[in-house]
Length: 253
Image (cartoon, rainbow, N blue to C red; front, side, top):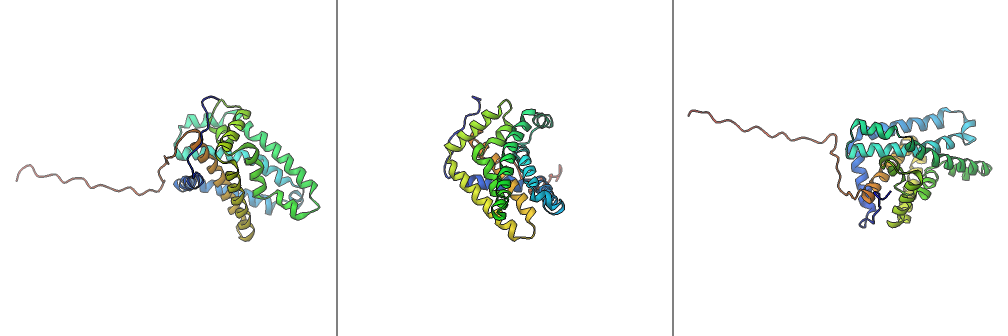
């Protein structure tokens, strides 16, 4: 745990983190585009194809909260791979770690249980019960108690326990304006929910928001714990200039 000491980053950090998040997303459009497409498909299955009875009972809320931490852990690995590629053996070693998925399952179970209880208690008020399944509730229910760096720490800091990762993440958030980060995430969640309700393709908006927050967590972790401000990845479709070869002069005039 001594190897991972959070630092207080230079201000203003929020605009820098947002810009770096967009550069990572645009640097690997295929990878993150597939992630958004898969999430949007899962959202469509949950809201349009599943039986209404399951949705009304809060089953989709429970499943969503169970899977959201695992999603953000996987996105931390994808962001690291896009930012500073890992070898296949190193990547498989991270994916095979039991503590990694336990670190996602435990907070997911707690958040899912709380969400279901609130949904059940407020089921008489459709407007309030609907709030439980929205982005702002799901996101804040994980970011507030765990901090902004928890999921990248679980994914990229082998040897850390769940408790250590949570403590380090909370310390990092407090050192760098915890409420500024929380208010930014809450505002972004509110905007994403508004767009999802107003636009016909709600699943894509929700999926893009969740992917953005997952990569944003990695960018915050990288700046606070790895002390790296630079953007290491190169865009996938970056144009490569061809330098013409110099002409050879004839040996004889």
